[in-house]
Length: 303
Image (cartoon, rainbow, N blue to C red; front, side, top):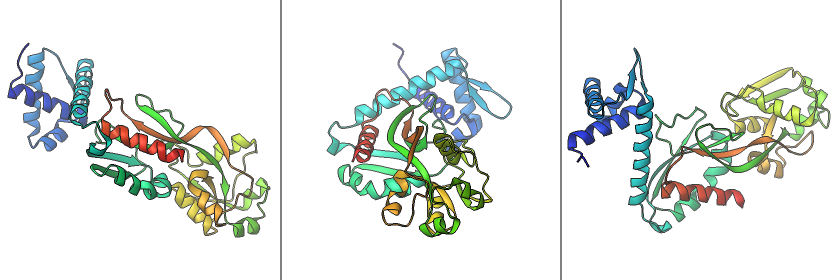
C-alpha cells in the first residue's frame, strides 16, 4: 500500500475544503493560502490520482462525478474518525454542534428546554443559530436543522420531531369587533397575518391555503394583510388585535390557555405531513454527540 506523505495529505485536505465550498477562493481564505496555491495543490492531486476532480468554469468550480465520489468517501472517513475519538458513555460525550433552528420554534419551544440539555451533556458545546435561510450543508458547517415542513428533504435524513396542527387565531376583542365567530365570510373585512417564510419556497399565504383546503371552506379575499417572516410574530400581532393569524398549536397553546388568543372557527386541524422535522446529511456512522442531541430532542417532544 502506498504511504501518504505530508504533501499528499495537504493536497487531500485542500481538496476537501475546496469541495465543501465549491470555490478555490473561499478554500484559500480558510486555509490561509492564495487561490493560486489551492489551484496548484488540486492540480497535483489530480495528476497523482490520474482523475479530474473539478470542472473549472469561468466563475465557479463544480465537482466531477469522480470528485463527488471521493468527496463523499472523505466525509465518511472524517465521520468515522470523529466517532472513534468520541467516548462511548453519555457523561463523556464532548465536542461542538451547530444547530440551526427556524426562529419561531426556537423562541416558543426549544430555548426554554436548553437548560436540561446543558445539565445532561455539559461537555457538548451547542451553537444555536436562528434564521429562515435555506441551508447548504456543503458550504455551511451545520450539523442539524430543526424546521417546519412536510418532511420532504431530498438527499438528506429527515426525522419527524413533532406533529403540528393549525387553525386561525386572534384576540377575543378582535373576534367580537369583526364578528368572526364561525363566520369565515367575515374574513373579507379582516386583516390576515401571514408568515411568508413558513417553509422553504412557501407562498406568502401558504398556511392559510392549507387550512382552507383542509376545511373545504371557499377562498375569501381579505381586505388587508400584514406579512412577517416568523409565525410567532404573527401570533404576537394577533394578541395585540392587529388581525387574525394562522396559529400553530405547538407555538400558541400558552396564549390560548391564558386567554390572549381564541379560536374563532373551531379547533386545530392536521394538514398533510406538515410538522417539525430534524434534518441532517447522512452519516456512517453518526457522530455520538449528534446522536445524543437528536435523542434528547425526541425525548423532549414526547413529553
